[in-house]
Image: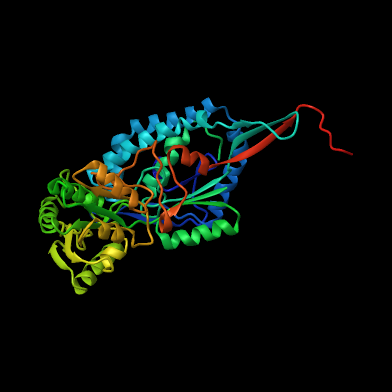
Length: 456
């Protein structure tokens, strides 16, 4: 594979098939959130650079849209092979740049390979429809055509493809360019956004003003409901994973634990035990599970949410401490935190706290738990832990969310299953057939095989 020139690795951007400098000549520092040290500098793109990239993509679009399905499939599979060859390197980049644990980085890279394998099937799944007509001698065909240029605005945390952000410009941009650079794409109107709901509203508004279709995957306030007849040990283990993996910095993490009063105290005790036993360190420690928050402002926001929740009457069971790291002056690692006696209006419960925090709310019965789960503007993911899976499924049907998982936790992504939310959690869905429909549009073509009588 070709790479950026050795003397300026990662210091150029990939536009129209070439590695070029940013027009501003300025750079951004990329910092390792575990060590707080600068890893490297990347180009600071300007509006002119974005315009140049868009224009290059527009020139290439017609050729690529008409490429045979096998050719388009081949390009994705070649890029997937490149990622597999660079698997270990990618994992290390996710650790150092994004603060991922080894477990999360491996899962993320494996999922990305699987997602690319699924995407490679899309060209052969672009099927249209054939229908009769009310007009004699007419044939109706509906084709699916590409929407055109897709502008992608995605987060730093997950998944690997794509996640362009100033926090992770390499694993979210420059590395992706390298993976696709040698697969034979042409040198190179939907706006796809993944991020917070407030920013998403602005992006969607701007997209609509330009008559572009917005595809939004936004915030979540995901509930983990535990019934009285659930296996409490299993439910708490799932709850710990759902709250603490990647330090809670995943949009489908558990934000609220809604537990039946009959098992509430037991659940809190077991969950706290998991929180205290989870390895919490720099991600460069191979045993680490909970690593750093992505930056200082996010860390401080989480600490404020915890303190405001305690001030509002919640009980701090464990955590709420910055975990000091050797040689790091201002650590970004937070101890996994469990809060009891939480109500739905407290800051860690009503906000997407995006940290290793587990607020546990007591519910008198399942009706109350479902009501609490649905008392939010969000509806991304969720989970139900019940002794009987059939009952768990009935409860899951009542929770207003785009995705929900019975006897599991909410962090589930499979490339062949739809991924998306309702309410303030987004517009549209990704993966499976849904993403094909997001990024293509129907085109009605009619063919008049016999002379039509117009009555003139």
